[in-house]
Length: 573
Image (tube, rainbow, N blue to C red; front, side):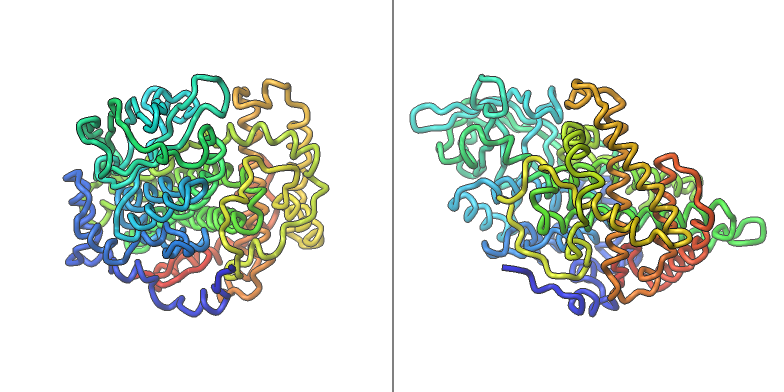
């Protein structure tokens, strides 16, 4: 079954806020119980805003994480990311507690759970319940293969022993997915996923651990749980015994693509706050926005948001269009996009100056998001872990696909085009032998070779791809494993930048029906590619920054009209 979202359906509502955005209301309105002031006050108290939780229950947010075949609204990954952006715009703790936690906890059940497990969890989420994801141990962190948590089959029971710590919403969840070691044998077949019904688990075999307090997302309930010979039905195992690692590698592709795309809402607000300051504050007899440095920072942040949206949206769509190839794409998104966000926020803080440290008032939300974003970027897997999954695949891709593959299908990039149903079973554990995104880069370079600015930029990217290919082929055997040295991680980073450039080119080439003349033009594309080639160490291309005035004008116009700084540019509340 394919979705029914077409170009007219996506773009027809641009002048009205998205449903969740409208429900939450204008966050700058002081009397709004769901405004920035209320979220800042809750953050200072260290408690989730109850009015926010009630609003999400009224909206039925849990249905967004349940597949349509089970009665929910989850049909396409790019749509889910856009749904969650208004939440990230306002409060990272609520976004993680009611968004990321439910997504990370449920995808493994949709991927490998039995019919009974899926039906039960769908009922929990559709009834505004929560699920927590207890994958990591405090002592081993993101190295989930070393978990000390044990699950043992004893006659007709599955007995759990061990502790799971620093888990979001664990004490407040009706369901928990737990990663457990089910065999002492080495290798990837020694771990299983367990779905725990917290209401059915005997309370005398559970001990809730003290809550951890954090500097960012201070309202997030981060705690732990200890299982002491806790008996559960054997049917609590999700998928087959020993299949956890394969299930995780598939399911995490969804979270690695969707969550960075959703977190764009927070950086959008960061840019909005600083743009408002820069336009209104006067210095040296003119607005701060007229100062070259400030204007350059604002323009650069807007371009980085567009790059991030091109990359994340394309990879979200790839989960549907190219499910066998998204292993390296999603991992690269999870590394590069949070880096773009962090760098943009750091530069924006310089423009805002001392106000960037305020925790209340009109600039308090900037400080809150600046503290929240680093935590959000580490949800279930940090960037280094993601790079470690990419590195072993690079030599094979370099040898068998780069510079020879054809381009990805146009459907991958058409923002409002239909998508096939999301089928987690088709997601590949590895990316195989083809790399259509870099094939799009090669194709675009040929199509744009005669363009005076885009042509040289694409030529630089193509040269970088050739150099990357040779460097990957020359890697020593040890540097082709997750235990590789720094050189391999630098190659993985360069690969991610080239993927982002390919996504920008693909989005521009395949969206001639976009209603915004700005995004149909070449100016933003040249400026965005110039930022990416600069990250690769390439020399400036003459004329690549000529569109900065046009980009800044678009930024100001969207700010004054109250529209998003993403590829869609929909009206905000």
